[in-house]
Image (cartoon, rainbow, N blue to C red; front, top):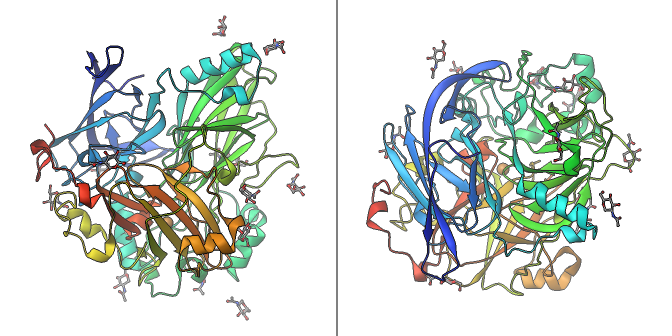
Length: 592
Ligand SMILES: *[C@@H]1O[C@H](CO)[C@@H](O)[C@H](O)[C@H]1NC(C)=O
Ligand SMILES: *[C@@H]1O[C@H](CO)[C@@H](O)[C@H](O)[C@H]1NC(C)=O
Ligand SMILES: *[C@@H]1O[C@H](CO)[C@@H](O)[C@H](O)[C@H]1NC(C)=O
Ligand SMILES: *[C@@H]1O[C@H](CO)[C@@H](O)[C@H](O)[C@H]1NC(C)=O
Ligand SMILES: *[C@@H]1O[C@H](CO)[C@@H](O)[C@H](O)[C@H]1NC(C)=O
Ligand SMILES: *[C@@H]1O[C@H](CO)[C@@H](O)[C@H](O)[C@H]1NC(C)=O
Ligand SMILES: *[C@@H]1O[C@H](CO)[C@@H](O)[C@H](O)[C@H]1NC(C)=O
Ligand SMILES: *[C@@H]1O[C@H](CO)[C@@H](O)[C@H](O)[C@H]1NC(C)=O
Ligand SMILES: *[C@@H]1O[C@H](CO)[C@@H](O)[C@H](O)[C@H]1NC(C)=O
Ligand SMILES: *[C@@H]1O[C@H](CO)[C@@H](O)[C@H](O)[C@H]1NC(C)=O
Ligand SMILES: *[C@@H]1O[C@H](CO)[C@@H](O)[C@H](O)[C@H]1NC(C)=O
Ligand SMILES: *[C@@H]1O[C@H](CO)[C@@H](O)[C@H](O)[C@H]1NC(C)=O
Ligand SMILES: [Cu+2]
């Protein structure tokens, strides 16, 4: 499927006589309209009339021209998550960093090259608009020269052929959480109450789901020992979430609870929406899905009853395939999986539950074998409603042990190191990634790409091109969830993590003292990496990246309310090789 209005022009590039690259032109018309999602009606951002937005399907090497027409009654921008934007930093979609927001009634033309292959997504990057439904899948088919990792699964030629065919027919599965309030209602209530809004109302698969309300008895019996410990004398609310007044979750700040709105922390009204049905043909032997988390809030744990999944790509890049039954997906990460269709024909439940500690929430979809659907068939779960194992043999993906294919290695040492401390910033709903807080107001400042001093200097890191940079992420108490930290532009390596405080003055020193906590041989290579949750104490992680793409790029938490609360920094990469801005992107030009 292509975005409507796609025009593909085949152009022969002059580079070599056998390389072809298409120019793919897409128009995304954004509107603000009421829509019923999970059985409840609220205004959402529609992309060409759709929620979730329609998929964008590309071939590696394509030149993309993505035109956004903003017919919403507010400013917007669109970001292409995981797309490196090498040589096109003005098309990264971050207000105050790479562009001026697109005003109501105006258009903007994003141009970029699909250098990488695999699973990505586009999403809103202005204020909290991600949570208003502006997101859709991107898939870039690998060039024929890319080696595939499937022969690490089997040497059976028939099976290998089936895997390649499944990959060619891969389809996106858009996973998300959903709130019945709009992002601006949530933000206004956070500002008025001082409270961090950490509960959702539903989970969705391909935009489909329902609001389930559990009984008090069900909630109390589902509450886990870890949740009880954090709750003290309180209980989970009727939306099975921590109340607003849990100090462990909110920190010790002042709050005005009467400024909270119903449904933010409690107030469950059940409503039914459609259920996603994924139809498969067992003669294909495998189905390939690109699991994409567009969640604004919760980590999502997903499994398919009675089936295995071979995880073969993470964040759009191949990994040595790993056979698992369940995957805990941090916000904005993508996992491409091959599901062997080797079970008796019928219906199997796909289960997705909250993987975050503050809330019990779930949804289901159906995997249906086309030949013999058995409607309402009960299948056996791998996971529980609280994201634990429902059988003794359930295998969860261990993200940090997935090995890139082929292996890519970071430099052995870094040229520069930055120590960043993550935490609340003077209020439960305000956050910092280092120093002060990258507040929403900065989205309206002159883009850093055009003016390197438009943002306070403590919120900016300046790097030299072709150097290696270490970022030491320290998460301190009080209790903090895993923060999915996304670095724009090229991917980064997660080279180490641990519990406690990072007390070393350099990463090299830490590697000398605790080599077991580091991996410089085959570390994860991703665009979004969760910090370890700080439950009983502080945690740290170190990411290392190569500066190759001069420009201004944001790094931020992908929990939307944390980003809106200021958990972000700007990386001014390659200030010694800063790009000159094409005339059609200067100032508030629109890219045309
Ligand atoms: C949604 O519906 C409500 C109630 O009918 C109406 O007041 C509101 O203006 C509508 N919003 C949009 C964006 O159409
Ligand atoms: C919308 O963006 C324009 C710049 O394009 C800016 O001048 C204006 O203040 C913004 N409006 C709001 C409400 O943020
Ligand atoms: C290869 O896989 C096919 C399909 O599952 C199976 O029918 C065949 O027996 C296998 N071949 C070998 C040599 O194991
Ligand atoms: C829980 O309630 C008991 C009895 O009312 C009280 O003594 C105790 O301090 C409370 N604990 C907390 C953590 O509020
Ligand atoms: C915290 O909130 C819960 C649920 O809203 C309420 O029942 C409880 O009394 C509150 N506790 C305190 C200490 O205010
Ligand atoms: C608390 O919020 C309520 C509702 O918005 C408001 O009426 C009240 O003035 C606020 N109280 C304080 C102390 O700000
Ligand atoms: C399933 O795939 C096989 C082989 O491609 C095909 O012959 C068959 O018609 C398909 N079944 C359905 C119901 O589409
Ligand atoms: C959540 O789980 C409960 C219990 O298994 C189930 O009844 C309910 O339908 C599920 N909710 C959704 C939206 O699938
Ligand atoms: C979950 O895994 C643990 C550890 O392997 C095991 O002890 C437990 O029995 C499993 N739970 C179920 C319901 O099988
Ligand atoms: C996950 O893998 C890492 C790296 O191999 C290992 O250190 C860690 O113990 C594993 N975690 C679990 C829960 O198995
Ligand atoms: C940190 O501590 C947690 C729980 O206390 C444990 O599960 C985890 O494996 C530890 N992580 C590392 C990297 O040591
Ligand atoms: C920046 O460094 C990378 C890596 O060495 C190099 O490929 C690229 O050409 C450099 N960019 C500029 C603008 O010099
Ligand atoms: Cu966060």
